[in-house]
Image (cartoon, rainbow, N blue to C red):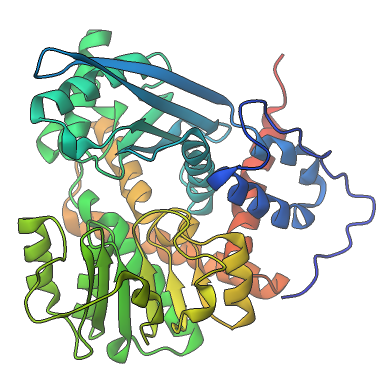
Amino acid sequence: MSQAPNLGESPIAPASVLPSYLQADNLGPWGNYLQQVDRVIPYLGNLARWAETLKRPKRILIVDVPIHMDDGTVAHFEGYRVQHNVSRGPGKGGVRFHQDVTLSEVMALSAWMSVKNAAVNVPYGGAKGGIRVDPKKLSHGELERMTRRYTSEIGIIIGPNKDIPAPDVNTNEQIMAWMMDTYSMNTGSTATGVVTGKPVDLGGSLGRREATGRGVFTVGVEAARHIGLDISTARLAVQGFGNVGGIAGKLFAEAGARVIAVQDHGGTIYREAGLDVPALLAHVARTGSVAGFAGAEVIANDQFWDVDCDILIPAALEQQITAANAGRIKARMIIEGANGPTTPAADDILASRNVLVVPDVIANAGGVTVSYFEWVQDFSSFFWDEEEINARLVKIMKTAFAGIWQVAQENKVSLRTATFIVACQRILHTRELRGLYP
């Protein structure tokens, strides 16, 4: 990778002052994002004077979510909604329910949404939300009450033209239906556009559930073509086998690739001849994990990183590929289905070993792209068929990837840095055009 160009007199943003609500010695995922921004600043030219904008979320809301539990007690959960940047349009980003959710994580996820939306050039800013809870420990009724209370608490900053939540880890169409209904009841009219990823009968879009995995597959095929990797003979290892990893694995298998290893919260399975992906998807839908799948060898979770494969798809949680395991990965290409699965230190190791990383901020942008289609359809009350949805998605993803690949080649930088160059220039140019008010 070449050194950053000498920008001479170009104005560079002053050093960041760490917000008081973060710990300097434990920045978590937000620290990874800040390192990614620092790497792109030398390529921003005169827009670098606005770069500090990227390092400061516009708005952070932390809420208490109290609910009546089934046993008569009252439980309190901590909820977040972060709007990182809304210069290009309403905030857009998912809501996750997970016991390890932190403010640093939600901040980073919201920032990556800003970059992702700008990278594929949809008119959104970046936002993200979450509740610090293990939803598996809640009954159906408790889950609904928590979702509705959280929606009411963040209702002051969300809306079809302000901030549009969507599904993420441990949330789904039903959660979005409850959120949409709660917001609508509080505002006095049905507002289908307040969330995306809804059931089709409530204004959801065909193809939305498969969109993120389809996007991973689409840019993966494009990237493979550039490095001369034949998909029809490729071997895949996939971490996470839900709507992202599972759909991507299915599409790659249909294109002739062999999915030889899969890891999720239930364990890791392996079969050199290739796993039966449709059967595995059915097993996961029935049991909740890959554990117990017949016809596969069980291997230790840590051995997943040693699997000899051509393509690795991390599609679970962030910070999975680190300096500790990046040197063991044998894949020629990594396609990031999850948000933030690779740390900056791991990125450097992978680059030194000529492993191509297709970053999350373009690889998994299929979901938000079809969310944009859903939002547009809700406003017009005119809905497209699934064939048209998929065709529009593939066109946008291919166009975006082609532009990013070109920027990477011209600047001799990684695809991640190239994506940040494209996206941050768009975000900061809009910031500059709009100016500061008052």
